Amino acid sequence: MSLFTRIGELRTAVSGAVGDWDRNVEALATRTSSGRKVNRRNSLQMIAVYACQSLIGDAVASLPVDHYTLKDGRREGVDPMRSPRWVRQPNPFQTSYDFWFRVVVSLLTDGNAFLYTLRNDRGEVAALYCLHPQAVSIVEGPLGDNKYQVSDDQGSVQGTFDRSQVLHIAAFTMPGCSRGLSPVDMAREAIGLGLTAEEFGSRFFEQGTTMAGVIEHPGTPRPDEARLLRDMFRKSHAGVKNSHSVGVLTGGASFKPITISPEQAQFLETRRFQKSEIALLYRVPAYLVDSTVSSTWGTGIEEQNKFFVDQTLMPWIVRIEQSVSTFLLPGFQYIRFNVDARLRAKTKDRYESYQLGLTNGFLNSDEVRAMEDLGPLPKKLGQRFYRPLNLGVVGEEEKAAKEGKPSAGQPPVAPPIPPADPNADPNTQDPNVTDQGNKDDAGTQDGTD
Image 1 (cartoon, one colour):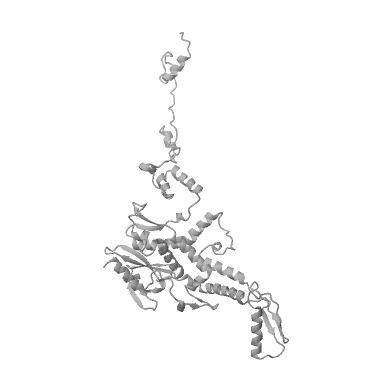
Image 2 (cartoon, one colour; image 1 turned 180 degrees about the horizontal axis):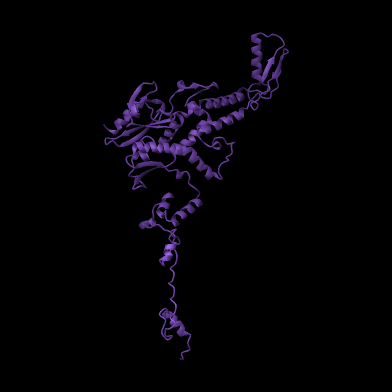
């Protein structure tokens, strides 16, 4: 069976679920206490939810994916041309960015990501596809030997796959459960309140009036007369265009305003608090979601960026790295998202750190040039390592002194001159006197005895 035939079967099995994020799941929505129905789709209508998911998804998907292997306890990078093709491009229909973005968003919305592994005739992974999480049901088996059923939009099972075909990455999991908890389901009430506050603000500006209140009539008007009076008043004064207009009432009717405003109802404070709650849900710094919040952590943008990587991105990155590496790569091999690409410092700071690495002997020129996307130096000149010569080993100073040898990094010490023999003939040349010394002494004589 050819690879293209298997791809066609996969598309039939998932019924377009590959990359299909426009599925209508309104029927699965649950009504919250605020009156709004919330599901994974319409939760994105709240800007804070959309901002957090897109921020994390874009940040992870934009990182380069590197392939490493362990040899003799040392990590070595694998040549990209020798790495499996799915490391560079998971499948023929999506780029690496598109694929990993879908994986991260699947975790952020459903709490689960399901990757279908398409293998060739040799059993090697040829492509990866991210399935729609709501189209996959887990059939739990003994000792964790689970099966995965993929259904279409109507709920009909289109295929059943085992653990050798589907990689399941779960986010927040409870003991004894195979499926991860959905962040959207856990924060349904908070999201519903935020959506309700947005709707309240929209309706206020659409139907609001500066004379908001009630119309009192001294008599007992008929229902059609009361309705006509209300419609005429609304037509003349409701809406933004008619705001601040002068009202005229006849027949003894009077208008009594209700003095309540969005500020008194804490409308703005509610919306700001809901943004902070959604940021807390995804562990995103609040100042990245709400522009009115100032950052109180770190001394600069680089420290804040590092805080975002450490506290927000790394848990998702490590979860994906370990799951994919354990499942797809044999032996001591693994993939790693290169977060250094996001933590890239300014040019001056980078060059100063490179200088420390070069002068202390743990980096060579070719390694530094590779980090700057430059090629190696010719004739392997960039593979040399350098170390300072004025350093010694701690604890070897006394040993070197006893042996009469200089310690590492110290200049050689001349041997001591032995004392002169008092019985020696003064006309005899001292063996410790050099020829240069004799020459200097001779140069001071005047040539006579």
